[in-house]
Image (tube, rainbow, N blue to C red):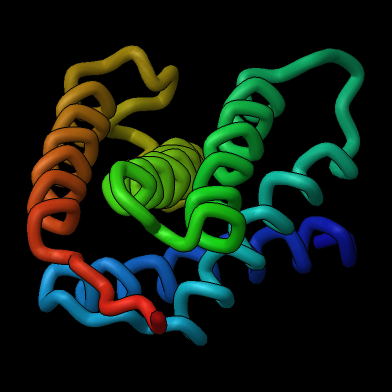
Length: 158
């Protein structure tokens, strides 16, 4: 495994893990500033380092990375420019949820490509097992995103 691929995968796993911690906090109405910063930073770096991986053409992963970077720009603006005021609270939660979902989406793709017991279930990733897994992940993130947006009401300093 090349160094850039190792860094990319490590950032992705840290981004997913810290994002899950962040959303558990949001579901409990808690602001986890340090975890949120770690999640946002590693998720931005995951998407950015994906472009440094060898490729001879634009791949679907590049498109997902670009979408992720756009969504993360909205999340960063909502948090650090607009300080979650008014609608920026739910815009932040929604954009952060989408960014985490996209990271997990790619993780599921990679799992079906590389995990020995999953690969035979969907060798071309057009099989029902792959589709069902991705739909379940999407539905889970929609539910968690909605619940987090309803429960997360940070108290901002005046």
